Length: 441
Image (cartoon, rainbow, N blue to C red):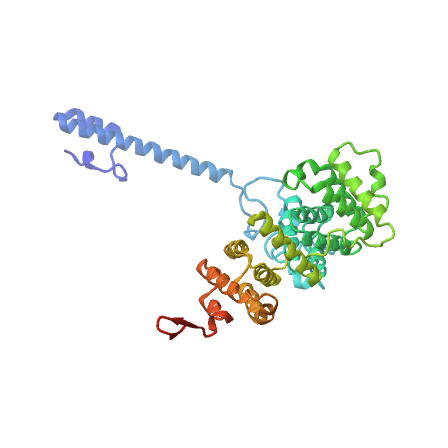
């Protein structure tokens, strides 16, 4: 193969295509050499075409470029021949440029979104605490635990302080509605505390109109309230009467419903409130509308209630009713009085049936948790201390007491230590036996 055949396509000394064709004619090619030769010729032709087109484009761009005058290499005018040839932004743009000559900048308010915004450099900053307004769900979530805790401590000032931290807004009337709803499901002492709370909230957190709006809504919801609390109409009437007497409701609140009540339950509540206000019209406050709850009752009254409870149990024998009555008294710290009265009643009666029923009642109250170990021990200790005086009026009191103590111990009502402390079990008894010998027990 000749030098022209092996020359690369990019070498300057390459032969023209015409010279190659003449040499090709005078030489005999094998099929393999001929195919290789044709491939090289085609590759060289493509390379020449690409090289020629790139040179043409460079020459075209060179012609299109605007010649750069001497000394204007740093001119900011466009060198591409576009635009009017004026400087960008009138000479006021670019890095490190302060702006056009004669331009005066006025004061601009700092932008908070500016990365260079410095909050401390803006002068004295005043912060305000923004509390979002409560909705119905937030009201239930915040007020219900507050009211339940109030039923435990009974401090209205703490409730007022907590409510002032909330943004009640349109939900102000929901506070008395939640409190009264929980009180309807609770005990008499809870209803008394709720009436006091409504009276103390007026003028500090709520207004009379807020409480009136709450009772208006509750009167309309009575058909649903009686499903959980059948006595809701009468109780709601007592709440209304107490609130009117405490000046928590407007004096003309009941006048709004005269001849305008279609619901039978709401009519019963309004009539109940009207009757109470007519009876107590000379009294400023209806303090006894809920009774005196819990430990606020006089001791004599509690003792009388417990005696009635025991007498009713001895007649009916219903343990559940006795438990219910004892719970309603709400005096867990005074349950030792029930133990004392039950034991004394058995000693004075000295009847076999009374002993068994007393043990049954004490066992049921012990297992239900109403009477604690401390209250049970205190009740029996009081009887032990008064047993000598009881024996003067009831000669068989000693033996009945021993029998009662043994039965209570077998049923697990009292401990062995309390049984051993019984005065009848600590005395010395001598029993004659057989040939006159004495056995000390």
